[in-house]
Length: 132
Figure 1 (cartoon, rainbow, N blue to C red):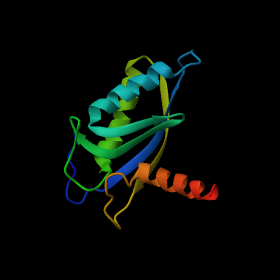
Figure 2: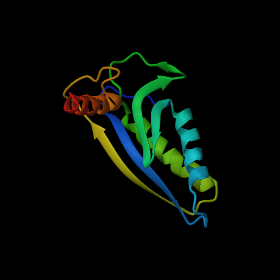
Figure 3: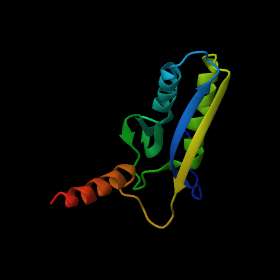
Figure 4: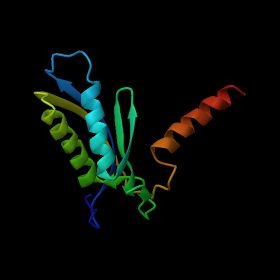
């Protein structure tokens, strides 16, 4: 697993890996292979219907590394996406495209539970107020 240098940016990414040219309508096997790669990366990830969030926590094994940031090092996040491409090509997929959104911030520390999950919870809480 890549370690961050003092001046390396920490990032959260949302990416959609798109296998092409397989001749099959389903991309499930390729996406499952990418998820296996992410499991080995040491970064947490969350699969959703149109992609994967990655870099939400930096892990060693199943332990959260002692840091208050939820992002992963930019280099580890981008390497994980690269490794997904390589693994999907190794399955025989001739073309892989990926849409990527990467976010970084330097204005504050991100406490555990306040990153991506915290953003979602904030919107859920706002909507819950509408029902009162």
